[in-house]
Image 1 (cartoon, one colour):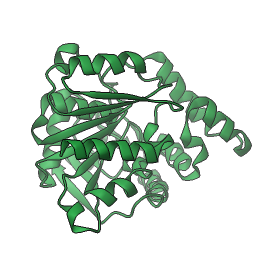
Image 2 (tube, helix red, strand yellow):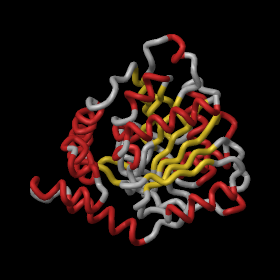
Image 3 (spheres, rainbow, N blue to C red):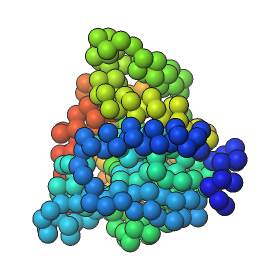
Image 4 (cartoon, rainbow, N blue to C red):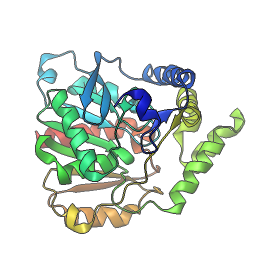
Length: 303
């Protein structure tokens, strides 16, 4: 299916215009500049569209031979959101940051991937297209659901899975959507009020100008066309055998942290779960140095 034809489908994400797409790309590039410089960019053709991927890597030979990391971002964003994490992760091992089709970014969606079977197929095709047969998969929020779903439905290429305040564990509740809308409205607040609102809402977007501009532009530029994913059942979670590391914000509004920190290790043998204080839905942004270290330690223990 052509990109033009895909734009007419009700179940495929799209930009509202070419001009807004270019404005969003400009805003994204300002956020990418805050992190590591990519070694290259690549487009991978899949059954569901074209997946755009940024590749980062260590300068030293030993790091280049380590199992790579694949990063999957949250809903309504793109792989630029990983700017606090790409320097430390790519100093240790190869890193691939994926723009998920159906979200704003440089990927082009032609078929829906919100169904669990399709999501797993898309991600497996993407990894295959990159020539990756063993990866440490890291997902945040909606990307956490994609990673969790992959561990259940298509774990063959996974060395480990790290979930950062992920979807897929509970049905998305009203409190999360209220927080999302409140955060969006707060981006229009006067500059002097933003630090106080950022602390109240646990929303680092408000105090990073480049990130704030990217999120605001995304809302204007792109139309997401998918339902919220359903959580995995306890039976589905109990099938997972991939080494798993769950990181939850103590003040998360997406999940109930204490409940999931107790539940996930009970259902998934060997799973590790930790709750990070003084943060909500973005521990990898609020506490980047600490989370980077914990993720790398976990990956090293698996390797």
